[in-house]
Length: 146
Image (cartoon, rainbow, N blue to C red; front, side):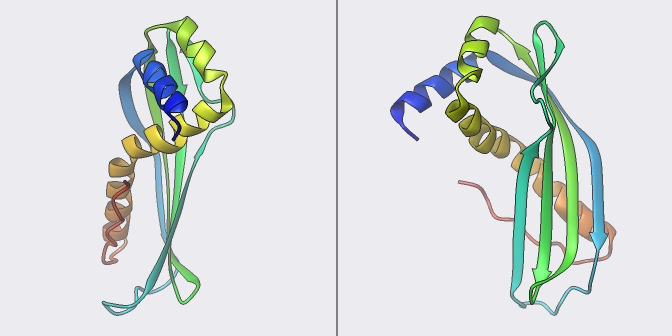
């Protein structure tokens, strides 16, 4: 990340404050049998935002609705899938700064891919582990994000 983007990200983060994180949906499916311990599993995940995010809940409140999808595959066949949707509510401390910085597409991408993902990853990891356990599967430990 360039020094300019990093500086802009710091300003963007100072213009908002996280108020609430709330899970909205949590859906898990078993699509196959978990192989024996030690088998090579493939893990795939992605993060996306709802169309129009962030939405304005009020004059000084922005809401993001990230969705996380996760698949566990064995021998190229999906055996488990998880989808989780959260709501993140931010108070906007400085609307003018937020609007100016949010207009930068590169900065938006960095915020979503770095800040939101790192904020939400521990919660999503727990959703995946809970989903697998509820379906009688041995949970897979998702990696740490660096």
